[in-house]
Amino acid sequence: MTMDLSIIGIVFAIILFIIFFAAVILYLSFRIKETFREEKKRGMLVVKIAFLIGILFLAGGSFYFFAQILSPSAPSPAPLPPSNGNEEPKPELFLLISYPSEIRMNNQLTMTFTITNPTEYTAHDVIIQTNSIFENFNLISSTHDVTGNIIEIGDISSGTTFSSLELIAESKPGVINENITLTFGEMNQPITKDISISVRGGP
Image 1: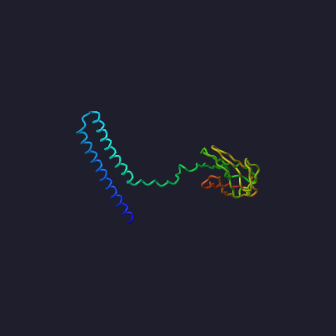
Image 2: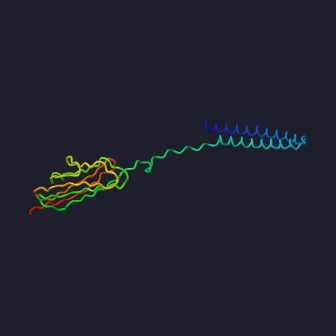
Image 3: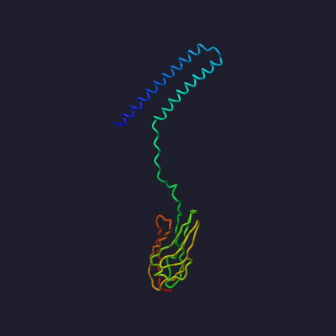
């Protein structure tokens, strides 16, 4: 109800303004017309014509000004949620494991982990998590530090990184099934690989 009264008041004020301004314009037009009849000099005639044109421009400008004030302002757009293009870029890693699928007891084998980073961003705190590989094979050497069942790779920049293990098979036959997990600080989810090595007996 209050809003309706405000609108009615604004419309009434505009009507009064138009009537008042129209009366002023008519009065000035009448006075200028009478003056034109009395004034014969060309210079004064030009000045009066310019004055009349200025009055008309003033009237038009006043109406435009009031129209701008009364027109509703466009609502400011709501802030957009951050898109994927504004998120911090992340590295992406790929893991490939090379190993013999079969080996004799007490023989030495080499297991190589090839980690590829095709992006230009560095992956931090990269580790390779094993389950029981060091319980079934004896570790001889490693290109990276080994703590428990974890191979600590560190940071990997763009390109390819290799990590190798020198192992000796135990003196009992069987099939060793292992799950290898690669993790790093910026990952969305870990990378997992399954391997299987058959240990045979005999010469």
